[in-house]
Image (cartoon, rainbow, N blue to C red; front, side):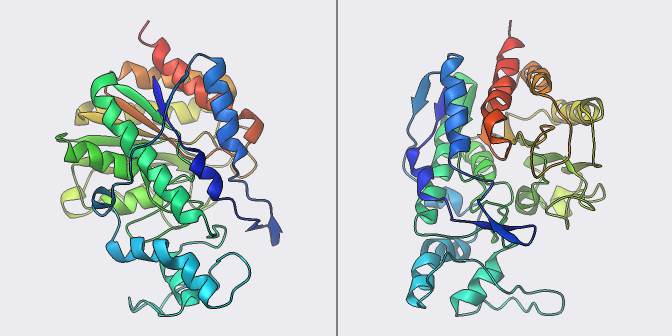
Length: 344
């Protein structure tokens, strides 16, 4: 298996995020990448590739041009206003305040395009985000020959919507890869999101489409970020009706309950008969994750990796969350080991 990754991810690491009323060291940190690479190498996954160039035309099939222009210029606009810290929004178009007009001032733009305040923009953010998207598209190209590849993306992507960033995400790497499969001739793609948090951005992008089946297993929005999407009655609109499937689960969910939902998602994927499967691989379902509340143990990741392998579909794994940093490598590579063990 080939892994596509880039050292440019290190260009994005804000000094802090707001959590529990305090400015803390971000949970989404560069060493997450390091622990995964260490585990990959130690278990024999030693073929690493650099990403190809960032494909703006492909990305514009997923995100609006104005949003991408905002991401590309936000830091410069912030500095032009004489701001000394990192760019964090301070106001949002809340209920009865939204007229879909984009402000001129960077303070307003940050609020217009953002969904949350934990995700700061700094000098290297745009470069790192481009690199992550390029990792996903490069790995997607490999799947046609190798049937499986791993895009070790950082920053992650599944909270980034059509014209919105947040939740540590700037561009939706998994959605961009899914679109890449379609551009290359796939008729249908399944996007399975096993991250603890609902992939509101992926849902947003594909909600009115039937060429991508989106399925998400996540903490119920009543209790878990991003709170405002991820309910079972969100099933798609127009052509996309029936092609969006949410599995929200309560605090303390154990593996047997989670795995029941996983098996139902796999059944739906088989019925859909996609030409490719994209897995938004977040491992923050782990029992000791600091910002999640599921109770999966490390060996559980191996077990569900086996289930994914038995689907026998060309598969791209795209890295998302996981914030129990010392265990992130073990849990991530357990999924991959399980996936390949199903072939034996």
